[in-house]
Structure formats: structure tokens, C-alpha cells
Amino acid sequence: MLLIKTQRDMLLSPLQAVSGIVEKRHTLPILSNVLLEKRADKLTLLATDIEIQITTSTGASASDGDGAVTVGARKLQDILRSLPDKADVSLVLEEKRLQVRSGKSRFTLQTLPADDFPRMALSDAELKKFSVTQKQFRQLLAQTQFSMAAQDVRYYLNGLLLMVDGNELRAVATDGHRLAYASMALEAPLENNPPKQEVILPRKTVLELNRLLTDNDEPLLIELAPNQIRFQFGQINLVSKLIDGKFPDYERVIPATLKNVVSLNRSVLLQSMVRAAIMTNEKFRGVRLVLTPGSMKIMAANAEQEEAQEEIEVDYSGDAIDVGFNVGYLLDVLNNTSAETVEWGFNDASSSALLTIHGNDRFKYVVMPMRI
Image (tube, rainbow, N blue to C red; front, side):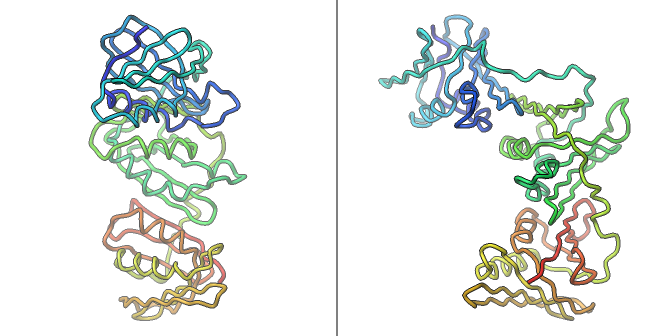
């Protein structure tokens, strides 16, 4: 049975969109597969890891009717990638095997029954909906996602807080050592709903969205359910479970007042940090900042007694401060903002510091000092 005949890219592009969540080795072998479902003139591709489900579709022509099968996502992707750019590709289902044909190339792949493929039960609760552009949401993620924890026992930190408060959408991430906050205005508040909604997106969902979203003004529809969130954009439909937990009170973490504030050129500061980082200890990555009127020195040393020192002239007349930070935390924020000027606020060497963008109160980055 001929499932689909099309150009390579018409099949490879949607397959790459869904296969990012597929685990190479899974306790359930079928979860390493992608579901191919042919209905009329449309081929739907679906992948899941039980926590996230991504669906997309592509046009199908010259086929022998409807059918469905699951096949190894990575192998099919590798085969399509290896074919010439504009090659014609046919997928033919024969006796529980899927044959990929292109020119004089033939590949035969094992399949598993489509009926055995697990699908996430979609919530039928009343959904709370709002819409933003893909570019806006991708920027919101870019400004915060680097502060998520990776494998923290406090599981609610291994994700990103998304909050709708009236006409404002906020994103917050923290790993306990630093915190990133970003917000944006919504064109309209949630309809007929309480003024505030909070959900925690899993880390994998955030990284997948960052991969799939594009920097354009196409709409992104976000639907909130009690234990799920749904994202619809372009041909892609992504459903994810939410982290069930209480996110820390981020407003208490952000310093309300700062005694000493210095404005810095972001690219100059970034380049100085990159150079100083070369001499940091690989495990602790600590840099020492010495801020005095008119000058900021950035110093680093390692176990081999090698040292680096950078000095930046600054317009500063506040208290002298000598403080240490993890240089990785500073590079993350400087690399993920495009602002020309950043403002760095301190109270003292033992208190958290606050980085903001000049003239923009929608972004805040809190970083804890470290002892060097």
C-alpha cells in the first residue's frame, strides 16, 4: 500500500518538527517511533514521550487510500536526510514493513501497529485561551529559559513559570542561584476567567518550543487546562503536561532597593567576561569584581596560579564593592539580551545583584554572589 509520494523536504520538515522529543532508548520501544497516519489527502505525523505530544501534517498525493503505521523516527529521519535535496520519496507499507523508495534507493524498516501507539488524553476541561506572536513568545523564553534548573530535586525548578495576570504575560525561571524574569503585554486578557493564571512548563517543553518557534509575527495560540497546556502554531500542535508544584515567590527574590547602580556597555562587558572566564577554575568558574569610582575590574584565577584581569572605565561614584560571581551565570544573561546598555545594581558584597536593561522594566535578572 502506497502511503505517500512526495518530495523529500515535504516529508523531512514535519518529521524533524515532531521527532525532537523522541528518546533514542525507551522502556517502551514504540515511543522511539513516529506515528504516520494517512487520511484522504493529508499525512499526519505524531510523536510523544508520554509527557509531551507533538502533531503536524503534510499534503499527501498519489496514494492508495487511508492507513496508519509507526516506524523508527530517527532511522526514517536519517534516511531522508541522506537523500538528495529535491528527490521524490515514496513510503510503501508492505506486510508490516515500511519501504522508503527514492530513485534507485530502497530501505525497508520494521514497524509496530498504529493501534498500540499511546496518545495523550487531551483535557476536555474549559480551556483558558490567549494569543501572542511566535516572535514575542520566543523572545520571552530566550530571556528566561537559561535560568531553569536541569536536574534539581526541587522538581518545580526544572521548568519555567508562565503567568497571565490581567493584560500581562510573565515568564520566570530560577535554579536557586539566579533568577530571570521577563514580561510582555497581551492585546486582550483571558476571557471570563480569574485575573491570574499560573502554570509551570517542564524544561523539555520549553526547549522544544524554543526549537520549533520562529521569529515571525504568525499567531501562537496558547490554551491552558488544569493539568495541560496546548500550543498551536503553523501546522504544529504541541500538548504538554504541566509540573504540579508551587513555584517560589519570585517577587521576594528581586531586590526592591539598590544603593549602588552602574551602567555598562553590554558588548564591552561580555567580551571582558569571556576573556576572564578562560582563567577560571573549571568546576567553580568564579570571577571577582572590584567596583570603585570610575573603574570596574574583573579578575579570575585558577588552581595553576594563572590569572586574568580586565578593567573597564565606568561612570560610577558609589561605594567600593569587592564581590565574586559564577561567570557562567553572567555570560548567560549577557548572551541572551541584545540591549546596548545594561544596568548592574548592588547593595553589598553579600547580597544578590540585579541586572536590568536601561529603560526597560520588563526584564530583570537576579544573581547571587559566591565566595572566592
